[in-house]
Length: 293
Image 1 (cartoon, rainbow, N blue to C red):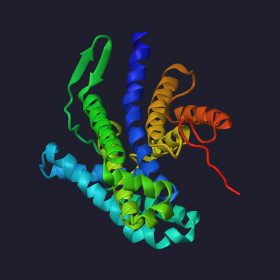
Image 2 (cartoon, rainbow, N blue to C red):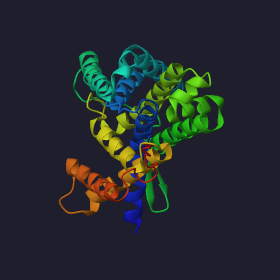
Image 3 (cartoon, rainbow, N blue to C red):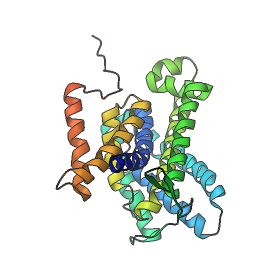
Image 4 (cartoon, rainbow, N blue to C red):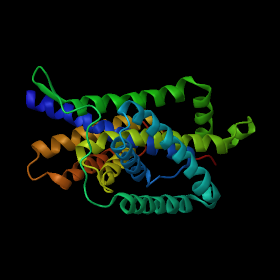
């Protein structure tokens, strides 16, 4: 029983990274109606930037806020410079741009830092803590707390601030928001910026455990896409819950299902999602789309 509990808690810790990335994907999708396939590469770039800042001797207490600000500016800039010019050309054009961003960002990271896997020090140290029968590393506890804090702050912005109200208005009905005097273009840029910042935190937390390389978030992006599909693209809460469920399912499957391990554990969450979508296509927390005649 204690082993099952340990595996579940470990899955939840990993699932927080998937949840943060899924939340970032959901934020962009709600604003633009398209999937940002480059979200994982943005997180990888942020992880390498944090590594460079750490190597330069900057304290982690400064690296985290600086990274979040830089990621926000980067995400907003990408929306302004690369996404905005083609957003009127339909979903396929937007998908093409995000796919190009995925390949381009990956190539830039490989060109600057190389393709070898690097060992990134944990911002939280190497200590191991025991709570009853459970064992936690300082990286798992600190990283989980950091990702959870980022998601809570993001939720608070959307729910309790005037900026969040404008962002939700643009996501729900951009035409009506425009009639109310809301700058939809500015809000979309802010949404991309927030998504990039949340994703940056996920990349920072994942790198010390997975190893720093241009492929850092490849599998994580697949699982985040699965998570947001499971939870529902129209629900930020659903994206977070989906990420946690995917983390637990993947961890338990690799431990208890014979023959499942390594990359094969990716099959399990996708199989569960397939079954869920057969019953509830909009996801667990998503709203069904309404078509009016």
